[in-house]
Image (cartoon, rainbow, N blue to C red; front, side):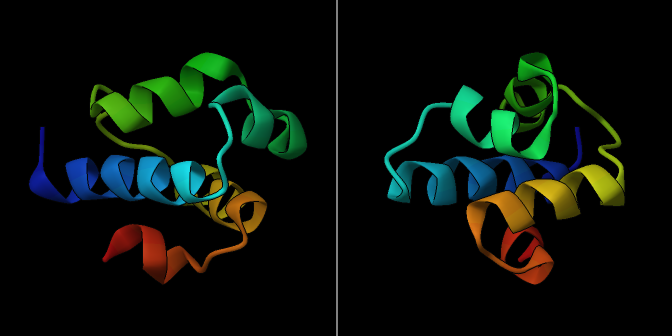
Length: 69
């Protein structure tokens, strides 16, 4: 598991928690499967697509850069 992917998962969780939402709330808005965000947050998805990460960022109202930094 790369450090970059762990950062993305940690940042998704951080911004999602700031909104006070569970994993399924942003996913319903982004029309993604529950396991998608769970695996990214856990760091078990080795290569989340940029489109998926962008969709999550949009749903969380943050930039793609915020999730990748």
